Amino acid sequence: MDAPLLQAEELTKVYRQGMFPARETFRLEADFMIPAPRIVGVMGPNGSGKTTLFELITGSNRPTAGRVKCAGQDIHKVRYRERDRLAIHYHQSYQVRHFSKTVPSIFLQPSASDYPLVHLFDEPQFNRQDGYIGFMLEFFRKLRGEGRLVFVCVHPQEPYHLQILREICEEFIFVREGTVTRIPSFEAALQDPEMRAYLGALANA
View (tube, rainbow, N blue to C red):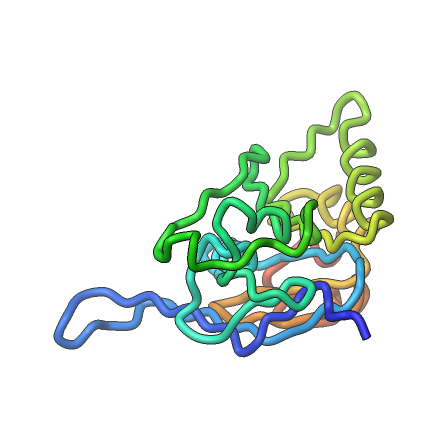
């Protein structure tokens, strides 16, 4: 049986401030598995941990505990310059995030993949002119059709943002105060009380 495309196993990231004793300022916890190609919408308030989750998945941020496995391979044990062959993070302007190097690459594993298996789009800019949105949606579908897992993180501010998510996403992840919750469909998302509180008036648009 093939390994899941992505698995976050008891993943935890804790930020602390100060010394003697250090004070915990933020904690992200995630434990989920996505076995096969699909397009996943990611939503949540600013500062809730969405970007931290993406950085942990791509290996540019080290977990406090737990691990991330991409197609069965622990991404934090893969050579830095080869991690984007497993999972790649595009932040807003589609610039690729860089990695924090803590262990010499000579002690790390080569990537088992030659092309990214997981694509994470962090608040992409959807230009409403000249068919750009349609182009981007087809690009997401193309990646999925090629057997890739696609995350699309959007902070909805207009009704058309929700229309995009409804059209393209097969399931959702909601991140709130460091808690990661999977939601199976757009309709289920609109029925979730915390999601409705986050969306505000957009939930009824």
